[in-house]
Image (cartoon, rainbow, N blue to C red; front, side):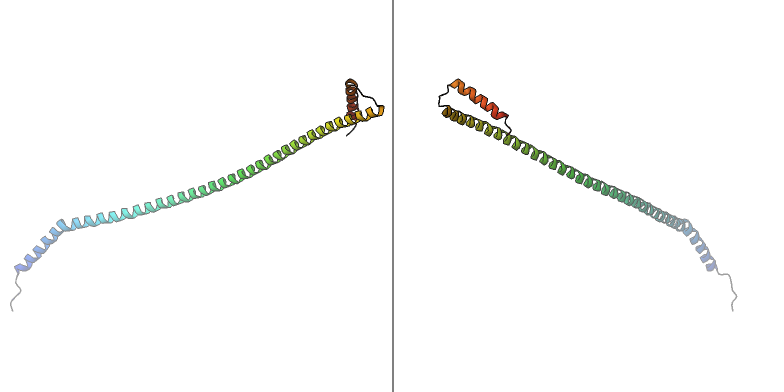
Length: 164
């Protein structure tokens, strides 16, 4: 059996392995770790940005809901005002119709009064004419124009004083 002797290849392989580890650490490990750290920071910043966006979205949602509620209140107020205006206009139309009815009635009453006065005046004229004819036949004389006018005016005056 041969004794274990010193083998140079084993030593060379260990040396090569150590050099490889040092090179890998210097060349690959630090950049790899830097890349992982940057990736971690990117993920954390993305999560933070997403949470911030979520907060902004919630705030926007709350703002939109408040605005919607405000718009609904305004719409309800507009509808209430429109109903009130419609009611006021209806009342004005009714008042105008009542005023027109009163005006028409008063006009009709005035027309009736004028026609009544006209009819009474015509009746007085006819009664005066008939009275003169009857009086003329009674006294059997012909009245001259002055006497006739005087008698008619006197009779009309007396007839006008009578209640109708």
